[in-house]
Length: 201
Ligand SMILES: O=C(CO)[C@@H](O)[C@H](O)[C@H](O)[C@H](O)COP(=O)(O)O
Ligand SMILES: [Zn+2]
Image (tube, rainbow, N blue to C red; front, side):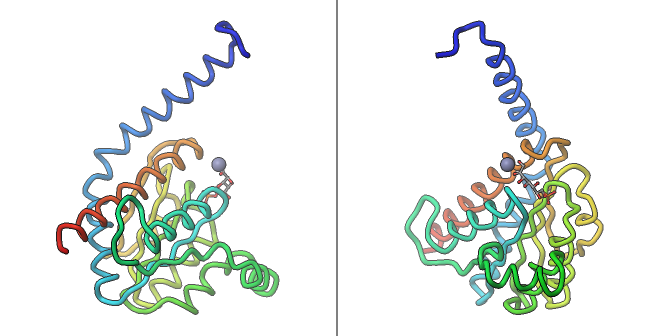
């Protein structure tokens, strides 16, 4: 067992402190956006729309995580909501990357599945991933709304959003801290959606 003087304890305490700070900073900047995001997703689903979610690396995990919580459940039993991650169909992903280039892996699927009124959840900590930026372009071409989870200064993604889109940004320079808050965003949205469904039933 590490003893009380193990210097790694200080590192761990620093990481926790950084995460708390990022968490605090993100609250005021995103409270209204989180409510708008939950309302928009529910309105889209109630009108027959779907949520498509994408991102790379840790953000691919977030995309799947969010889709599973909408389709199945977060904290309450309620009707299923139609959502899918665009990150896990390996034959589709590898074929698109192989034939058209990696930047097309999500946009091609948006072209295949996206319909007017659907929502693209586009997740990137840098806001710079070309595959996610391309997915936003494809979503707009299909009259979809974009819910962008970004970090730092929002990157290229922030410059590609339209007036109807929603950006939830963690203005922190560290990828891991941004990811930690993105997951909190996702859980807040799920909670807001489930509370609204429960209050309307
Ligand atoms: O999870 C991590 C780092 O915590 C990595 O896998 C990270 O997600 C990858 O480097 C991604 O490719 C970063 O992409 P992005 O967030 O800048 O769009
Ligand atoms: Zn990670």
